[in-house]
Length: 192
Image (tube, rainbow, N blue to C red; front, top):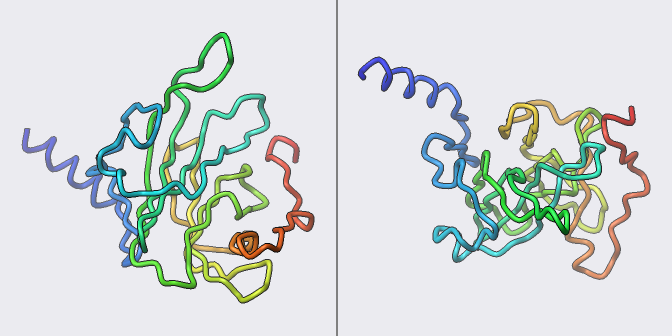
C-alpha cells in the first residue's frame, strides 16, 4: 500500500506544472473521468458562465474531442472532454467525459483565455488554448502562455514555444468588428 501511495504521489508531482498562473491538478480534479450531458450538472461550476464550447476538428465527420471555456470573474476553467455516447437515431452526442482541465486564475482586465481562436500549423483545429493579452484594435494578440489539448494523449500539455501559433483577438467581435480568419490556413493535419 505504501508503495502504491508513493508511486501515485510521484506521478502526481511529476505531472504538475510549476506555474504561478495556471494549475493542472488532474489527480485532485473533481471532474476527471466524470460523465455528464451539461456542464451545469457539476455543482462546482454553478457560478461559471460558458464563454465558448468548441470541437477539435480531426478531419472526420464526427467530432469526438471538445473544449469548453468557462469563466467566473477573473478565473477561467477549460474542460477538455470527449463524446462517450451518441443518440443513434439523430447521430447527436448526448454524453461526455472530462479527460483533463486547466484552471487559469487571476486573469487581468486586458487578458483572457482563448479557446477556438488560436491555431498552430502542426495541430488539429481547436487544440490550442492560450492565455492572451489584447493589442488594442489589432486582430492578433500577444500570447503569454499556451497549451495543447492533445487528443492522442488525452491531456492538456503546456507549450514552451509559441512559434507557429496564431491567436486572433476575439474581443474585437464584441466591439462590432468581425474577426477575420482569412489569413489563416485552417486545415486539419489529415489534409497536410
